[in-house]
Image (cartoon, rainbow, N blue to C red; front, side, top):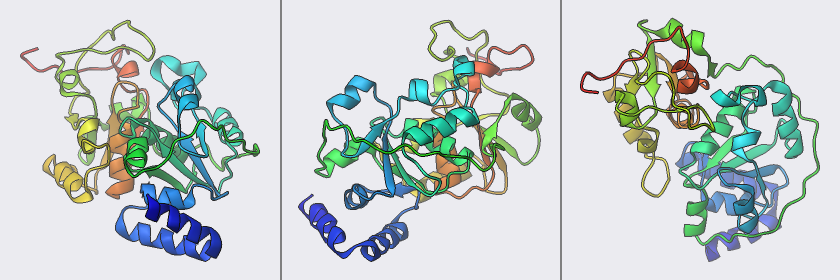
Length: 311
């Protein structure tokens, strides 16, 4: 970490050209959607960067967080209040209000992290990209990686000037709804990924809607879906597995870049990880996330689920 702090001081002295050089170096080593603790240490005070902490509760954030980080409560800030049972995507006006509160402009570099293998960070990444924000990064390994590299935590609460964020379009090109999934069933050139743990995929276990202990009315999986558990996309330390390893696994499932892919899980949170991996790390051009996921599909009257015969 001494070297990291030295580089940060050097960058502060020599200015923007040094930052550009460092960014180019990082992008040559890893996908640009990911950043390392070294990169973050060098850019953490950059006024054009907004650092967002996700996955915690407010009291946990107040007790310790990365310097200059702002808190987003995924349970309330990332869910459509009118569709909380399905953890639906934020509506355009609510998304603009959140970005404005965080002091984000359309050209701001937004860096996201959490402490749980970045599955919540991936959901916010998807939300941002879904509404057209371009410069988004995830801290690979999240806050544990920062601490492992010697990074300090703080209790200081950063103050930012609110903005007037506006989206250019509400098309939401990376979102799939129930009808999109139904239209993809059995069609050549379409793949569906179930990101839940295997016992939910097979039908051994059920699930419930967001924030509820009431079980779904049906169990099992979307017909034709293949299972790639979200946690199997990351290493034990929470960093993403290598591009080569991830690509090989998807190819072993017969899922290739020329196909359209839809990911789902319980509420569209875990499914954000395969969406992020496929679209941002592996470069698959047509990947969407079904945010209604099983909270909607398993409780709808016009949907079918498949259960393994031994369950």
